[in-house]
Length: 273
Length: 334
Ligand SMILES: Nc1ncnc2c1ncn2[C@@H]1O[C@H](COP(=O)(O)OP(=O)(O)OP(=O)(O)O)[C@@H](O)[C@H]1O
Ligand SMILES: [Mg+2]
Image 1 (cartoon, chains in turn purple, red):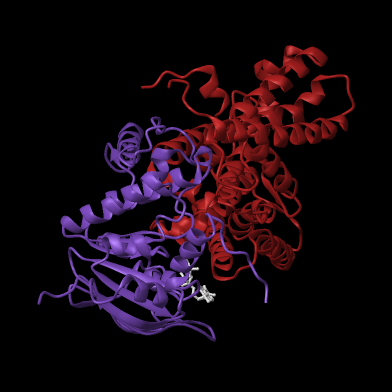
Image 2 (cartoon, helix red, strand yellow; image 1 turned 180 degrees about the vertical axis):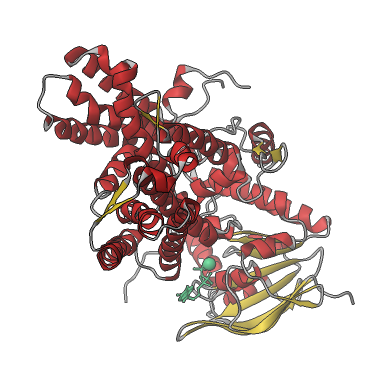
């Protein structure tokens, strides 16, 4: 078997007295989609932040291509080809689309110390990248981010990560703010990246999305890996239960549906108890 | 190159500053005379603008990045006294004095910067602390070493070269700092608006966490900006000491408010993330004209504070409007 692109070995992370990650060991191979699942506060975002160079593990190590790496900041991770869309933020309301897209990696022309930011090129690439997301309303890279809708911003952030994600693409709940068309485009992008041999780490709360793209699933419960399995090893119901922190919720949908079918389409009454 | 329409222009951060400048120009021509636009009159406000402007640029960049630096109020006299004590009192070469003044700026800037990034204390408080600390320091040492709070630096001690580069009048009444200011304006315009460096400052002011996550060295950048403002303030103080042949402990406090006013009138958003060098440049000139233009009218000098106050409020309101217009802008074509 080939060495995984990215591997976590016995990673712990605590913020002062709060232990957030507990002895995490995970691997992701090139051309593979790892779905990271778990309830709110399970530690998913914290986990990917240690991969993106935002946090350093308290103990344990991160390996890239089998060699231990020590990221001193997000820039280090980026330079090694790890590109991340974080759950919040990622764009700058008062900056133009082009500038925001290339932040930290601005295209330039000319020579040092007179390197000029290449606005035209930045705008062109940024607009093209967002339009590929089906957001054709954006056709001017000089527009400010603050004037875009939440989903448009999210699409821009993802388009940016895809543009720069040379080896590993990390997406933290990328579909949360997106419409059906854009969400399915994200899923398509994930599959495309996978085909190009990029390793993708995908966080989502939606079972459908996870099932659609995942090759490999890891479920976090209170900061520990509660389950780690490959596609086809568990049913949709089992996955749903695991994602909810082990509670049996999988049949909820079916229950509601059968109730509605039996009661002329009315949902069941909410009974406080 | 894209054609600029009126609509594009009005959304730029400096459009408010431009209107403000036009307003005060008309005001002083109507109520005063055109004298203040002629060379003799222009020198009076250009001198004020140059000294203020050199400091207003880094103060404005700090504000764009979401920080404040009020310690400049102490760094101006600190720069002046350092060069005066080293060269005037201890008779060391003027270049040692100049280097000493700028190094002090570097050190205080580093202290400000590191305190801001290492602690969660807002920069207003940090620099309020260094403002008083530096003031106490220079007061204490100048009394200790020279026995006075007003230290002389004779033209002979400065020497012809340093005097003409840093502290002389060109054409009778124009301070040589005007040329420094104009050269710095060009330099800042290039680095802030045409190089990637400027992008990072705006991003940092817009969303510091996202900027860091995007790989921008936010800590380094913050420290750099604090160093820039302290060194600029020390530079202005040093130039004034060489120009007027004397350094005083008290000079400088007015620069704190004046620089903030110039920057805000120049269209920089107090909350960060938005602004421009041209705007700060225009804001500085506007401030200087109001500050000096009053002498060309029959009004009492005290009224200039009222004008500045009203102008500042109008500027803040206008900036808000322009920002909203900038945000809601979308291309006209379908
Ligand atoms: N910087 C921090 N300092 C202290 N505690 C933190 C910090 N960041 C996260 N935590 C804690 O760690 C836990 C996991 O947070 P994390 O953001 O990783 O959850 P998550 O799995 O991404 O949840 P969600 O699905 O809601 O996004 C939470 O209880 C949170 O309070
Ligand atoms: Mg999260």
